[in-house]
Image (tube, rainbow, N blue to C red; front, side, top):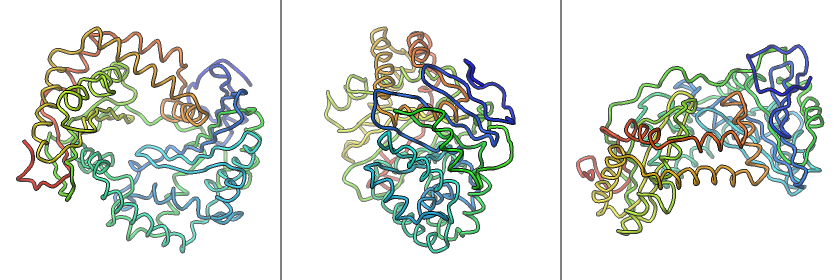
Length: 443
């Protein structure tokens, strides 16, 4: 069946159901609850495929902290049909690439290939995600790899400081924990625990298969069904999982300072607090605000701290959004002796923006930055594929490009200023990674 609609209430399909979304986008729901969404782009000679699972690190118990990321590694280690070498070699033999990543709310396994090799990519990725062996020997090998990855992350203070900031805001809530886990959680984790997490969590209703490029939707559906036949993902009828709800807010910690001592040449700083969830209608105003504050070379923070004073090479603001929570932070990397001055400037800019808001010229420029980044970010098949999957998995519907641009255009100065007053005022949490002890924290 074909219809012009986005996703309605969750249904338990007794048969294959296909809907036409915007333009060349089609979505098919299989009886198992697994969804396949594609965008045909005939002008390209490539195709990007992703298998997205709506499970991430926030879905782990303390005993399984890091299991999602551990599993991401293990699913490429071999199935009943392929060895680890087979999985990588088959894709690389046709000039393709494959990889995966884990976030706090979902995990993605993806490949990019020539259009003619999409059937191979579907077969390999579906095999890896649906039918991994999780061999005990591979668990031990990857345990060592992950522990090295955690250690490497600690040697990258510009990345580590964002994890310290998240922990300062969310404390021991799963959103405040490292996606990778810690040595204390990874070391004792058993094959039985990981495999149990795999089979309990990787179910068809939680999975979206997305593809974009020179493809035919019906052909992709047939390929996916064939690849999953007889695997644990070829299961009994079920309704697709609803997007993660955002009706309850995650409790945040009282504003506090957290220092991670590292013998670094730079001080790495993040200052900020709680933000907005991705279902909040104010997110468009926040996007504009973020660009004005620290989203580019014309932003207030970049101009004041780098261009005028030369105090930092890297300074920017960002807004992270989850289903029921968010973060707003300002990052700067600077010489330790300049950290106090940089912090004073950041605090001053946040206070001014909270009190006085943005100008009409800044509003215009901020809107242009948001729209340009969005549209220019859809210039390749990988970005198109990701857009489809995130819309289906995280929102339950696909907002068209024109509608999104219209939503940004509709943002007013008053809306941006209201968000600034709400999110940028008051006390803030501070995360610092650098050559400081708690008593030496830059004031």
